[in-house]
Image: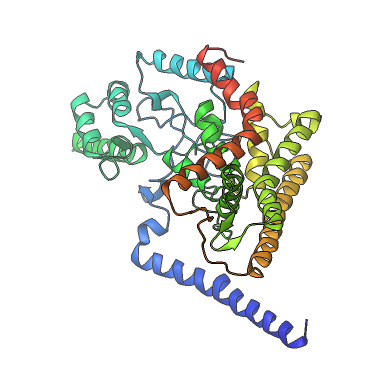
Amino acid sequence: MSAKSFKNVFLLFAIFFVLLGILYPIAVTGVAKLIFPYQASGSLYELDGKIVGSKLICQPVSDPALFWPRPSSTASYPCNPLSSGGSNVGPTNKQLVENIESRIKILNSYGLEAPFPSDMVMGSGSGLEPYISLENAVMQARRVSKYANIPYEKLLKMIYKNTDERTFGIFGAKRVNVVKLNMELLEWKKKDRFQKVY
Amino acid sequence: MLFSSITTGVSCGAVNAMFDSFTPLGGLIPMSLISLGEIIFGGVGSGLYGMLAMVIIAVFVAGLMIGRTPEYLNKKIEAKEMWSSVIIALVAGVISLLLTTLALYTKWGLSSISNPGPHGLSEVLYAYISASNNNGSAFAGLNANTVFYNITTGLAMLIGRFVPIIAVFYMASSLSLKKHIPPSPGTLPTHTLVFGVWLIFIIIVVGALTFLPAFSLGPILEHMLMLKGVTL
């Protein structure tokens, strides 16, 4: 290879390095921050001035007074955003049956009886799923209403308000964002207490 | 399921569900789409050549059966083209099956498997099929981040990707040097529906002959176990 073509190759490399490695990411980040500031910074939720969660990532809620997300098998702890992944347990693996039975036992201990919607006992592929099915949310509403001391009808209204329709009307099922629903529940409880005191 | 089929029909590899948790036949679909060589839409960066190799094999086999001269796009198909198209069609399959066998014979290969029974074989097989065909999706229960799997899947990538590319270049140079011959009554027309069906048939036969034994010990066996309600 001649010295000249070496020079050309190096120049091309340098140009594309600056263009695609530096300028392009900066431009895209800048445009995203300008046009979609909320989404670009992670769709975060605040409570009492503190950032408490993201609309896109579930949280390991075990408090019976809140809605629970789908089961999650991420490493270290459920809904660990640093290690997204499913259980990878195959359908003929004994582990799968055991996992589901133990989840059903927990649900039973809170007075919920089968049949359960599948997303109540089966984890998601990413382990970070923030959505649950509408049936799941409605089923949990009884438990939440008992432990959080909120009227059942009020919870149902909250659920239906937060229900997202099928994508393009055909894909998936009606679903509820658990993080958003829990945020609303907490906000409402705060306001409610406020009203009771004064 | 739709996304899984598309992502493995091209060499994409992004997933929106964990293939390892699929039912056996559900996992077989992505596995077989990759193992046919991701020829439905063509692979990223490699495009049409996987399908063109199949077309040339189909032209040749049809020519042998009905006694026409094998021609494609007004170029004669001869020994060099056949050699390279067979290499393109077979290399990735052969290397992934060989390495799967190696993995099943060594304890380094077996210790990474997370699911018992035939599903474990599917995990190993999928790892090599995916690596050698440039896909990147996985039966993620397999712990592939070990020295053994890093080296062998790397080997599968090198051989499964570069050998067919070299064969394609070889075939291209050979075809470009050939004279353009006008179609004669002896030419097999390749733009008809009949040829399309024939091509699909050839693809399935080549894919099935390469992988059916392995698939029948993996996903197909697991499917039968699942239908009988067996858990391992």
